[in-house]
Length: 283
Image 1 (spheres, rainbow, N blue to C red):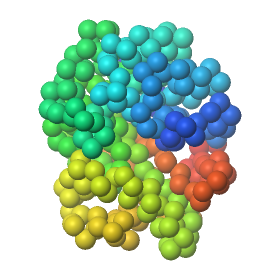
Image 2 (tube, rainbow, N blue to C red; image 1 turned 90 degrees about the vertical axis):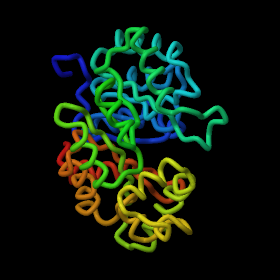
Image 3 (cartoon, one colour; image 1 turned 90 degrees about the horizontal axis):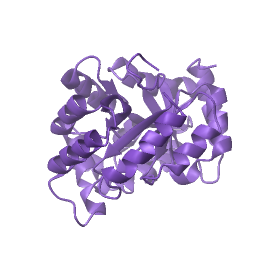
């Protein structure tokens, strides 16, 4: 925990869907030396799952990636934030975001909605250093820098990380998610990574617009994604190559990178996380 009271995320963390997280997984992640466990998807505003993961561990930070502003009013999540901050000081980070328009019938004026939501968190006493915003585009990045601890972007190449750092400047958290596949055969690796990237993200306007912002064209996002795009968004290879894919974000200016480990169906990701932790020298 830094002097401001903000959680120390460490350089590397784990992003995993809420339905795939439980206490044993959290304890294993902590033993492996990862700094933060991100609850992926749209965790409920009561933050009961985050509390259970915190209760099961001793040091690892738990973060939401992200509480959806449309699904959970700020007035609902704020008391939950205060409960966790009091019980587990320096170990919880509230990630919030607007989601994507295809998922919300009421989606409108995303910038105004984010501003209003952060205003409500202010009124409820949720500190700026205790929250991050899922920001992709320039306007959202500016808002993240001005009104939160920083940005937690999803499905972004290292070029986005570099651009985000240039825009927000020093002292603002940049904490991207990066998918990884520990598989040296490109065909098998892409067979694991492509479906996760394609559905739903290559069919969502905000993610497509962001990829095009960094030079990816129509051919790259069509038909499940070009090999080149999939190889960037779901880095594959041996442990050294996968670790290099995570370090690429750090080299581009990230303070923290959370790895989403992709495996074949019904395969335990913990052995991959253990190999990766050794390569990253976390333990």
